Image 1 (cartoon, rainbow, N blue to C red):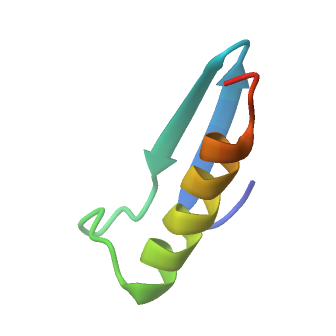
Image 2 (cartoon, rainbow, N blue to C red):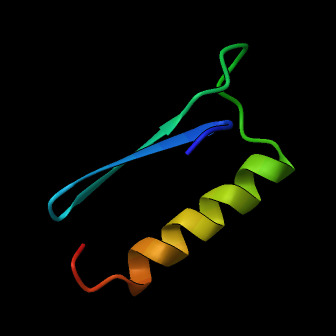
Image 3 (cartoon, helix red, strand yellow):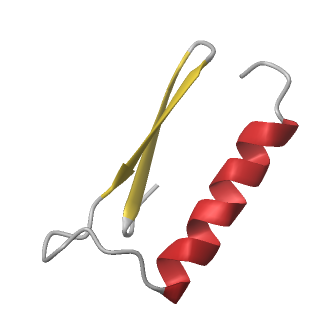
Length: 47
């Protein structure tokens, strides 16, 4: 995944990295993207 957040999956582990070099701050777009990522995490029985 490209953009302000990177994800990496290793088996049952999902690593989420905020990649916004200036401050790693969470703006509205990043917050929505994080919500989508965490919803996928919540809904995936393999994680």
